Length: 85
Image 1: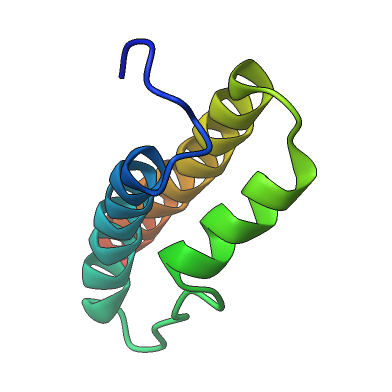
Image 2: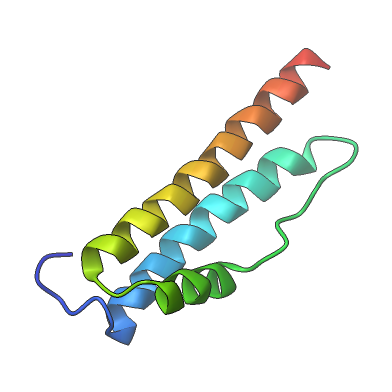
C-alpha cells in the first residue's frame, strides 16, 4: 500500500474489499452450521467506524488488522465447532 494517502477513497476501498472477503469467509463457514450468526455490520460500516476513530495511517492499519484478526478467529472457531458436531 506504499505511500498512498490512507484517507483516499482508493486506499479505503482496498481495505473494504479485504474486510468483505474475511466477512464472506466467516459467513460461508457459518452457513454450514444449523444456526448461522451473520455479521451484524458490513465491511463498509466496519471500515467507516475504524476510519472515524483513527488519526493516523498507522493507527488505522493497526485497527483494521485487529478487526480482520477478530473475524478470522471467528472463522476458525466456527470451523472447529462444525468439526466437533
